[in-house]
Image 1: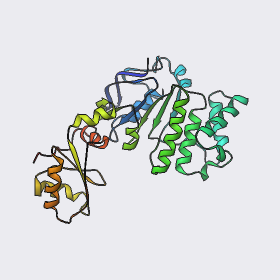
Image 2: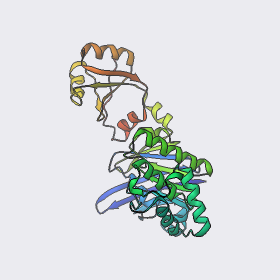
Image 3: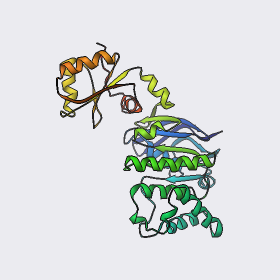
Image 4: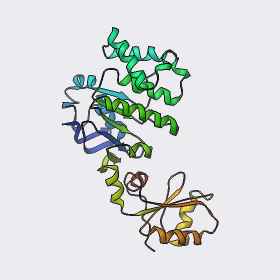
Length: 310
């Protein structure tokens, strides 16, 4: 059985369409990622799946239960970490989890044992009596994960769970998340703008303007591009996009950190680019397409232009 099954799901905020006939399915036990630009519909979809919002059209089923008619039965089965933190900085880690557990009807020994077990799993056993305001961003995220697991949910909904974390904190969060997943047949749905997160997913759906524009495994999505990628860094920054077009006739995309160019014959183009920009690159590299390239090509409405063959 699919843990989450969405068919023809649409939602409107007045005249604005946030979701447009979205269909996707997350099998039980998988890690399913949702990628897309801001405003693509990811957060709206999560609000619907977490029973905070009723869809305008279509169906969304979580663990066999319809979000429209069986929301009260769904809520004990899901753990939710949204972008905004639910933690109270003035309370200790234990106090925050006590409060969270009681909201789920947990008391006494079951709650105490649950808190101890989840904090150990998240690597926070030695921070139990620390005030949350003293924790780093990564530790707070792991504390939130421990809290949303207290009632042993079957599905986790994580909205941008690693946003703002440094690479070490992100890796530690994933270690805690994977430990929780191994413990039970847990299904994880997450949204992210971080390509490392996307690579860890079993399947990915790319949403743009409220529509699913691609859906497959990370490997299948990367293979679908069928190009090589040249990544260039230069002091010219985004201006390099226009200069590449002017000097060698290649179209390129600026990612905010570097320029990426998709080409059919990367080895041939490496030499051509170096000759055309002598001493102007700080780095240049050739690689197979990444999830970032899929994101640029598909989840931005296909606006990343193609390179040309030499």
